[in-house]
Image (cartoon, rainbow, N blue to C red; front, side):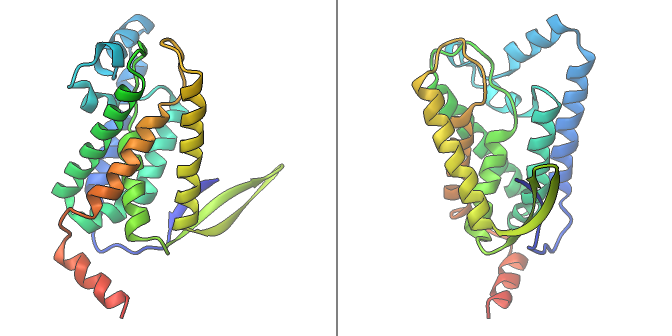
Length: 223
């Protein structure tokens, strides 16, 4: 299932979300420009490598991606869900929130895969945090979703609670499956970065101040 858009209105332009998308795309463009040796050196130095952990990579790894599918899927989810979180928090707090979720996701990956020598890269931990926040703030929002049916596809409106909840369950079971057969050199998806970022988003969004304009709009909506 691929989310296309949501039903939740916003009161401001998502300039920071757009800037994050543009920055990730620009860094990926730089990756494409590098030769294979230089790219491997870049990912090893700026991705999160648990066995040789360096704190700065918790941030730098968020802006690196491993291919077109990795990049597009991450940025698409950020576009669908990030604008409303930016609208809720305001740009400065949203940036802090985004980075905090990404850092927490990276730490979760390091703690649960301490022997891994492969660099973990991608914005998935931060974007998972955005999805966790969305689940808390807008559980009744409707997500228009593309659903493939054999050779055809259709769209259905799915409650955010159901869609994001299903997504999180998939991350849990996938993470457990990988954890039981993990090795220092095994590749694949950093599931626990997703899980850690998601849980960080759920916790942080309940403690971070929200913009007065958003608060007023919400109070009006539910009367």
